[in-house]
Length: 293
Image 1 (cartoon, helix red, strand yellow):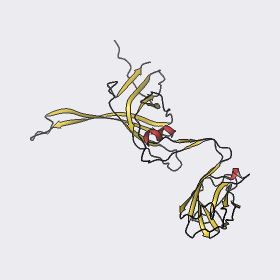
Image 2: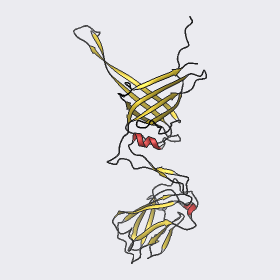
Image 3: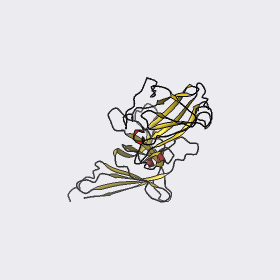
């Protein structure tokens, strides 16, 4: 009888985490740089006297680690590896201005003596630019505005920084009672409170802007009640030209941590890890399946 063809794994196809409770998938990772399920064992060796080799060897623990090198960031990664499910942001055909709040002091955001609202300027929706904006006291009735990144500065009518402090208002804006004043070329207007305007030196406030968009997400990481869920995962290698398939079903795992970043002129890639452990109902940590050509 001739030797059979060797079993060969080639490439990575997908990783699909699933709920330990329902078995339903969270989704599927497809844009992958790699995926590894490593079961690394420890060995205890007995040495003694002048003899240079072990007298005895016994097997120790085996650690089972799932490593996923992903180039995509679906919502479930944040749920499983950072302990918090994102909130979906619905598509918006007009954009959004939100989160007006005092940062330093309490005088800038004030319904009576400060700025009552930061809202979209009618007819200027196309000028809304993504980012976080800071309003700064200039005088008792005037403010300057700062934008913390120019990544979206060319959306609609261009805006440019006035100085290295990231100020975008060439002249201070006058806040008038119950009257709106435009922040030039941003699509945003500030409306004064109902009473006599009386801003206080040193005070600042902030607001956030979302331009017209087709949807998104937001998530706050690091809450005291965040939970890291157990999950299972199906790891699939690429289907070979011969038709061979190779699958690992990791029954029970917990992840902890997710790196977010990017390199110069390169797509972002994150290496995330989870530890697999014993599933008493299945009396195993995983199942491996392979079919030959």
